[in-house]
Image (cartoon, rainbow, N blue to C red; front, side, top):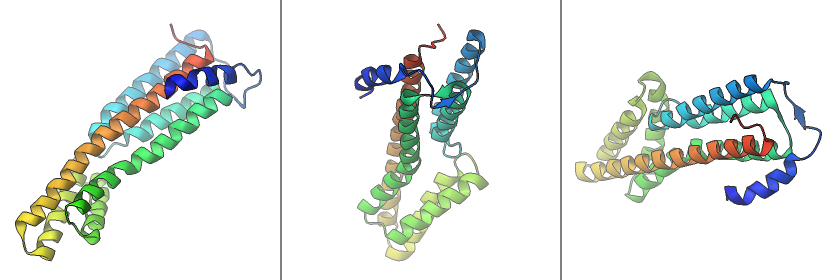
Length: 194
């Protein structure tokens, strides 16, 4: 997909007037900015293995900062729009995958919703893993009370954990695509650091 965008974006980059002008940076300052943005994006990518640090949002904010500093033309605007869409999708994919796996195993919607709320709240109260631990605990307790069967409650909780692991992998690959789009953005601008 990214390789298919390269010819299109290269043609878009040749327009003379930027849509949103950026600061006139010296080559050395631009290199420093690119290296800092790359480092922050890499940290955001690594942070996707925790549940409290919004790694995709960090990657998106880095791309936004780069765009505001260097300006937006049509090609960089397209890259940034794709990065934005991926960030939005990636930030909800974990809840979708976790809830879907739990629901497939027989969990009630109420249990899934309560565990999702618990995950959100306890991600802030008990970082970095409080959200996921609390979500599993809430789902287990709710399903145990509802079904009066600890094995079935444990099964739905296990499926939610599988969904959580799937979500981590999905978010990581979404983060890689976001960073790759930024690299294409830098490449098409002709302002590579080396």
